[in-house]
Image (cartoon, rainbow, N blue to C red):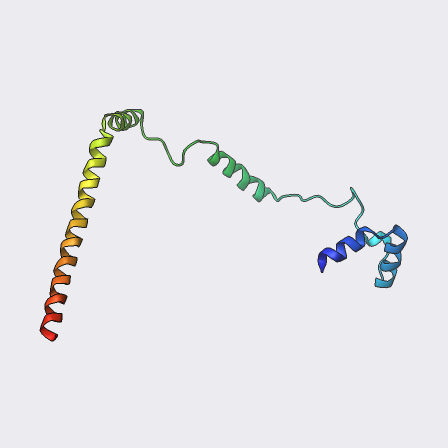
Length: 120
């Protein structure tokens, strides 16, 4: 409905718009004039807050950087870490968890089969 109304208003002539305004009790001076509307002026508090946000976001990382020695140690550890060995260790731990779950499920299945045989 709004789209139709907007399209209708776009096709009106200036005279037709004036007639509609008069019917509504408005005058042309009450309409906003192009280029004469008030522009938004932020408060000093907002400007200060925006400056603070800009300063915080100017860095590429969040938080404080560790000292240079700490950074060097962390980089060295990262580069020396054997990625494949770490992944292998994680996979083995996951496999062990799955094997325990499988064993538990098999034991439960066996209990159910025994119960079914006793009842049947």
